[in-house]
Structures are given as structure tokens and as C-alpha cells.
Image (cartoon, rainbow, N blue to C red; front, side, top):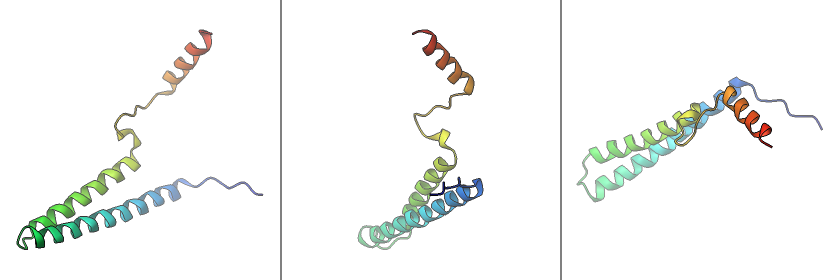
Length: 96
């Protein structure tokens, strides 16, 4: 069996863009559909519910895409510098 070669950074970036575009189309489409239904049922065929719900869907897709490109923006995460890792590792190994 041959070992699989690691993916290039261009491929990873392309996959992220593809995922973001697909997510945008799905969420904006769902928002559009919900807006059309809400407009017909509740708002006497006004256009603002369609625009609002499509915007909500697009905004949710944008937030997900932003998190995939910048994982430091995920709530509750912290980026640890190599110096902090070394200091933590040294303090745990010397205390034993």
C-alpha cells in the first residue's frame, strides 16, 4: 500500500471556497424559501420578508465561512504560542 501524500495548500483552500459557496447557496436558498412562504402566508405578499430571510441565510453562511478560514474566531478557543507550550511542558515535567 502506498502512503497517501498530503494535500497541497491550494487544494485545501479550494475545498474551503467550494464548501463556502455551497453553504451560501443552500442557506440563502432556504432563507429565500422561508421568506416566500412567510410573505404569502403572513405578510400579504410583501417583498421584505424574502429579502430579510435571504439576508439571514447569507449572513449565517458568511459566519460559517469566516470560521473555516479563521479558526481563531471560534468562541472559546485560544491560540497558544510555542513559548507557552514549552513553558507548560517544562513545568509539568519538572514537577514530577
